[in-house]
Image (tube, rainbow, N blue to C red; front, top):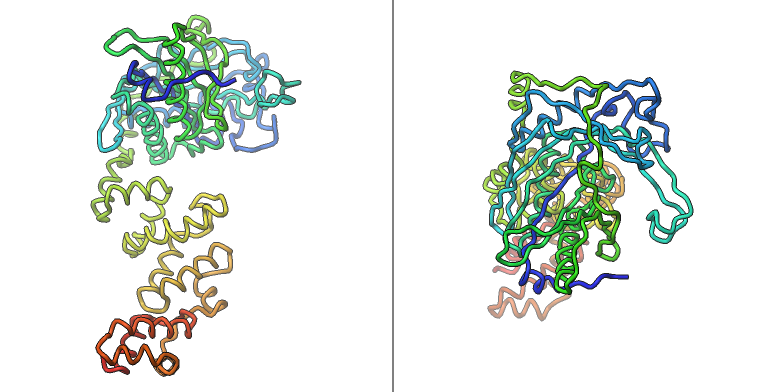
Length: 498
């Protein structure tokens, strides 16, 4: 049953939301955090396991050095302090997704801490304080079978796949986030989006939210207007899209407001997000740190990154995505809206690659956000999955620039590229798409248009040159669009003495 909720405007009129966001990032290492098992997504269940990640007696873990390097880079990119000495801990709980019955994580000694970053929403910059970024291992995946919802409640049985158990994970935890109430959900979305861009730039994760390699837990609480006392929080688990982060935060604000306004109390618990209905439902009461009985991991030595290594890694950090976007927008002369469309459309790197091949930014944007975006939407693919690259777009645009194609014919070439019909040159030849450049053929078409439209010719001769547009249209139709309209206009004007 759907819980009672307030309209978001009514909720924000009485309460101020307070957030804390925990983002889990699966690293793109080739092996797991503490063993040599592969990390490839989609392998048959329980085929990427070994005695270490299954927790068998006598099996000893070894820390993945590449994972530590990635953790340091993430911490540096988030302006964190990097610990000179830190260690792992055992987080104990009984649940079938970890065969060891504990998760190897970091508790009071994270590798990165006390950082900050910024996000921009509606032209305003908001500072997000970072509590910590710590290393841990991911859990296995439970599939609940036989129920209507896919949840454990109502299921007849459950299946567990341990392939994911032990994959290197970085958990990035913010400090308390308090922003203008009406901006809270949008700031949460912008923060997760910014993190995804940053992690991609660092090349430490594929951040595929659809595959669970980037997941957000959204902690939300409400406090009465004017109060400094924080309310009881809920934690909505494993939200896996930008839009869902914004929707989940909004829903929890409206739900908690209704609970408090009716005299009830918000329960500290984890909650499940339902993408189809846009609501959260109760999971389990939230455990506190003491419930996990943390203690230092006895089978792993502490991690003590040297200051020289940390500075070497700092020197490898790429330009921050937000800074880069501002620079590119200036260089390209795009408006804020145009740049936002490019970024939101997943076309930024594709436009960058196309511009680097000599295409104007405007032309690159036109094709990627126009014809190619339409093809991607129709096929349910991302732009980068179409099989069309910057080189093909640049080749087609250069044919347009030299007059070998017009935009209408270029769209047909892109259709052929998406359908895998070959290179632009092969498609042009196979489909017969080249522009007619023979003046005699164009003049014959012009003569036919003049003969078929005497009334239009009479208008032109009576001092209405704009009427010649109808004749140009007739010629283009006659030539099946395979003529340069500017060339047709030039020849027609000469013919009519305009």
